[in-house]
Image (cartoon, rainbow over all chains, first blue to last red; front, side):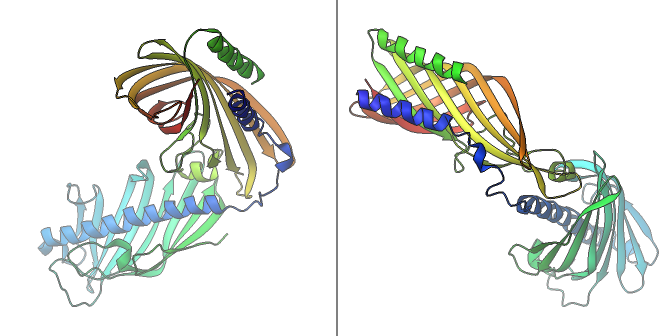
Length: 210
Length: 197
């Protein structure tokens, strides 16, 4: 019994004496992989929220407001629960291109900050399998102003090809293209990152371009 | 920290001085799966904002389970009282505002000393079910490391734990236990071994 007590006390002392100042800087190479992971998650959240939600909204309102929104130059502000509140949808040219724009508080990761964005979606030639679902060529440009002097700009590099013509929205299974993120602190750029979607269900490729 | 250990040893000695059954429990507790402590000084949340990602927030990089040694005695039939010492370590990083990689590193050591009470509401011979609560003090020792210099920040914390359900199995002097814990030191499960003296 005494041995057991000694063992227990010895283990307790070992655990409490884990302060080892000699290790400082050792095993700590200054890389920022953990922050990269968070930046990646943040960027993917922007894409999830903005691109997917807005495309869903666009297809929904095209089905509902069909006659009005298929006319060039007609603008429609959406304030119903079927779409994202406050989005302005406008048919901009004869080749089936719409712009969706919105300015105001927008939740990303569940937190609201002033966010402005414009999504241009051009309906791509497709064999429509399911009514009201289309393929799209998308471009995205927007910015978001957060607290403590942080802000960011996000934009697609070229166009994002969205192959959606099925019943369900498959998110990143359906997208090919790149989205860029530029992060500013007090007006000075502090980070630049890129997320590349490859049209498969696996994690998109992330690169820090700083 | 030394005071906490002295108090803890005094608790053990006082338990031995009484004519009652003494029970030792050695355990590790934390979030299921990670088995990481959820001490108040560790940030477990993923940063949700740019300030969280790039700003002054320390982000938890690694965290040990909360190791605990508890000594208790039977006060009455079905009721145990005891004293426990818990230890957990964590490491966090902070990024410089100009994004110059991880400039700051923070190591946190958390010690807590709690008085505990348990009530055995089911006695099935070798198998017991119990619930309990603990209340005490914690001591947090943080080292903020910047390049080759460091500074320390110490503070005292109020610590508490509630154990709605615990299961204990052991036919002899040695037993094993698993318990669900909600509190300031551990939010999750605690598993360990018990020795009845």
